[in-house]
Length: 350
Image (cartoon, rainbow, N blue to C red; front, side, top):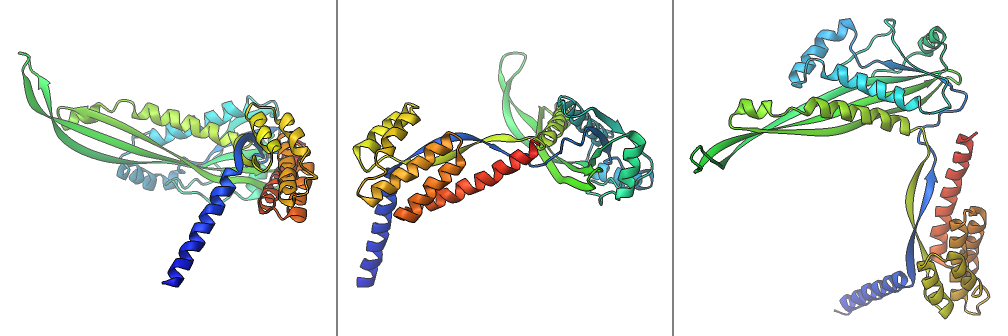
């Protein structure tokens, strides 16, 4: 029984400490720039786009069977792949980095089709294609595949007849869920590096209703249009992987301890972060180590807000090493990670 009470006391004490910690800090959000997931150096100025998703002739019979089993339209995969490639071309052409962006074709390589990611092209083949078309790199749509699933149900509904009387009728509803998958590679022929290798996917759902099963299926008129639109978005999303992007991140700062922290909180809430920092700075020499540590931590926050990560890391380090503020150690690791990403961003901008 005593052990049980002791455990309860520990739990209650821990909960109280966590509650106090949460109450002593406020959240803020800020925008930070992340490096591009895929780095395309500025030396790559002439880009070729190669569609490997269409099965070569010797693989075509198996691919046809796969299409039948997946209840795909006769040319649905072919058109979807073409929309994806065209979308990549259109999006790349908006970037002044590239002198040439062209769709290339070749009969010299085998394409397995079947919605599988083929093995990487040999560099001899990549080099041959680049020399033939005066290119620096090749982006391949390595595969494109759609899988469709049909669900079907009926229900009783009431409809008005010619005399305005409600009569029960059976309504048929068909739903087609289509899973679009596309695989990509980027071959940097100058540096002989595969810059990226990834599969992107997207789901679309089409629903049709009618008084009989045929009408329900016929009512699904927008499936092809939705698929082609989704294929266009997949192409755009792939190109966007080559660009830095912004995200919102959350940080915490101290708002309790002295009147300066309380007033600083209100200044921060109005957007006057520099005014808040003036008050935090006054607490840096507070005789209470806990208060001084919080002031150091908040000075790290204001320096990150102002874009000075080196100074922010210095303040966070001081808050931990001199005043044992454990929140500062976690924050210091966050700052180090962001600094590493900033260094990568700088490299990508060269």
